[in-house]
Image 1 (cartoon, helix red, strand yellow):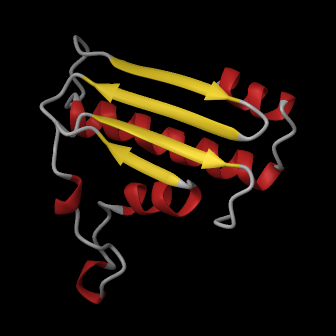
Image 2 (spheres, helix red, strand yellow):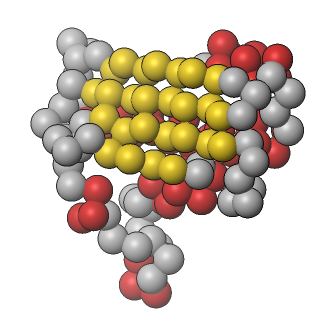
Length: 119
């Protein structure tokens, strides 16, 4: 994670974008460890990052069976406000320009475009 933050700084990303990218990447990694790999120390999580002045792209892949991202309920609905799950995905969606899951559902690509209006 430190390398990602360093590269964002080297490419002159604004502090607000660095914060959002860091938070989204951290959520994706934590989800992969907890939900994907079920905290199994024998399973790995692969993280690949590409950073330029225009785009930050992070791919997180776990060794789990995958999931259907459309099955995650909206955590902003009245009956879900007290439920702690689902907020990480909402945060990733709000901070990143694009999020794409693999068909299997065990890999996610997080992308932030610097020229995005979604800041």
